[in-house]
Image 1: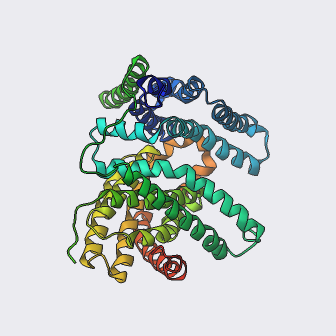
Image 2 (image 1 turned 120 degrees about the horizontal axis):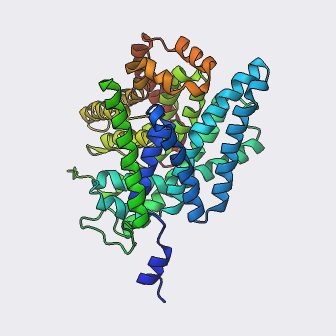
Length: 245
Length: 194
């Protein structure tokens, strides 16, 4: 019955191991968003692009799924109507469509990583990867803070808009000062509280922390990691092939 | 007072906090880079705006290693956001230079802090490197943005821009450092943060 029982941890266990998620983000970032690789990788990329959406469905993240699909739809919509638009709009539609179709997939994957991985899971995965603590501690603090910062920034922007300080309403330097400075002040304060609580729980202590999170590779991880290796393999073969010809 | 030079949990958490703020600002500004004219301007805007959190960060830096770790984390994040492996290299170099510079001021000198941020800012140049090292390939990968985009970027980014951008990063880093110091005096010291 207790919260920390093995069974409740097992029930909360994500679909994938955090290390698999990280590998997928990296592959998507390099191949889909970075645009590495040529013709041979095109079909592979299509399958890769569908992956984050399937994963969101598997984790029952309906809202994120719908938003991602909507953005992707807008992107492809722009690309389809593009040839029928007058010249100036044509260029804009092509650019926006190109950017959306290229970025949305990887952004969705990143969202999936952040939304479905708890900080403990992330740290324990990083420890198993033998990452030095100097990297894992700041990184996990950052992942914890990103949603907080964007929420803070949103409410500060709203408050400043009420005072008439927004782009188009006031001088750019004013907007900068009155939006960035409070955002930073509150983030630093939140961060300090976070750091106090993390230190109480032994983060940064001299001994290795133990962890009750259940992570580890299962069949689905093996399949997806094999997929990542396959993509990189195809890319390397393509590189060699080009040189051989 | 003799200080322990080993990095503790709190120092690493501080790197995370300021790194997060720096990255959010960087990311918000970098979105502008989609518009061709802003692409070279990123080497101006990012160092200037990033100076605010970075100067605040430097007030917490009292031990060797923190600036270097910050730089390496930026490199890793760039890798995760699809900028390729080049930033890792420039981050390592720029982070090391910034670290040495701030250390020579015994982690206190205000002038060295500004100079150190200028050096740190040079890592941003790594984001442009794929464009200059493989000029043809870079544009081939971006063919789906449309010919108009490519023409605009090619006009804005001839090869001789490479050293200009590097210097711009450094100079604007200095400016950003000064801006950061001014805001530090005006706001953060009053709020008891610096």
